[in-house]
Image 1 (cartoon, one colour):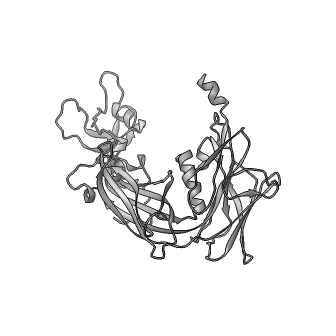
Image 2 (image 1 turned 45 degrees about the horizontal axis):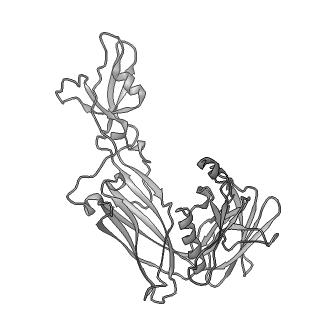
Image 3 (image 1 turned 90 degrees about the vertical axis):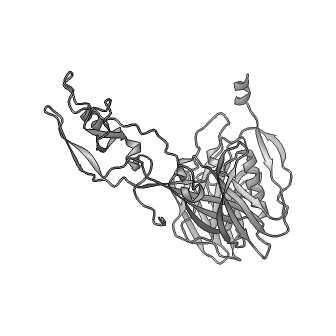
Length: 398
């Protein structure tokens, strides 16, 4: 019965009224339709900007429905025009680097492959800087200890008021049983032979970057001053990503009241700032309209926002000085023998060829169950490339 109900769920239309503050959302039921979905943010950062287009899909579907073959132009009221080209299905990137300039009006124009035209106009929001990022050891409501990363900003002009945050976090990976040597197979037929040689691949330290995927918004309109102290990230003390050295780059987007309203509604609806990653249970009426059909409904928002950013580094012991960091795998030693006198096979060479383990050192344990000459560990425990990239980011500071 529930499956039948789900299959025939009616979509919800969330009408968002922008009156300079967040208004209650009126809900109207509609039947499923094929709506255009637009994700378009232009900032004051000099770069190639990205716009994404898709179509809604039914609630029992999971496929991403990219809107391909569109023509996208962003122009300003000083006759500057920026064209976008499709780099991936539904993803369009500006052909040139550009940035939004204060006091100019920007127009987004989308022409889909069926000839329909959609537009929106916006001006760049005011700028507000991030003063600092701080850390604080806290205990969650579930009783778990971790570190809270807090964004602090202040606008003495009291005219920012609405904020959205995104972040990129990068962490260092250093396996506990890394060796600068490795085993090389000299002969995989009897008599079997291996040798210890200098490792040719740099896999002692690696790095991995993750991106925020939640809607992180706050407002100061209801406060006496335009001051933000916003906890943007909470990480458990047992989380591997902070076990060595960790960095976070926080970006602060200054929104309009209408844009804040849009993201707040989207957060209630889906919990993600990527409308393409969600099975659409309805749509949010944004600021993009159809020039071809004034009654056509369009999902999405065209933002022209000021962005400020700040980066923070810390080591595990900086935050948790008397605790032991966590590694996401047990690292049991194995020491297979080179030649099995009964089967005639080589357990050691078989393990090397399986590429599941890596050399650590000569076997000096004296433990009877470790018979072979060499100690090996699961590859994750001795090769950082299992978990990340050995290319050090240009911004990284040890």
